[in-house]
Image (cartoon, rainbow, N blue to C red; front, side, top):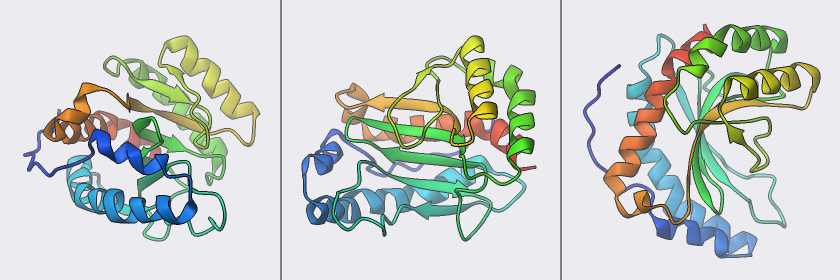
Length: 208
């Protein structure tokens, strides 16, 4: 496994979830901009270094520009090979809901060359089943729904992705509000980087 030297920054803590307790658009956006986005910015070069992919990787912090009334339910930073965007290509996402921190490797419904992505996910099924414990899969980046990663679950999700044009394919890991990990900023950073590195070989196959 690729080894990297970790310089600790004070990353995500339990108090960061409180941003999502604010019911107003202005209040929640202010919290995201002031507290979470700077942490995404600090984390980004470490994730890119850890991935060490052959192609250049660019970070994209969610802007929520279409939010005019309702506050965002989640926020994230995505990493892709395109400096202009990420939704149409494979990407790694690190982000927050009000009750969890997540890392997802994803191809979304908007992905270019969808049939090629389906074929690549299918070829990657053996590698996906070899991931270490407590990984999850999800067919929808706009919802909290997920299931534990199992061989049967992977096949079911792949078939769903093949049949349903609006479906996503995501594999990753989540840490829930109240987990003791949020009392240890160094461990949060270490886990985010570890999972990103474990997903690196799969990411590399998706973007080749």
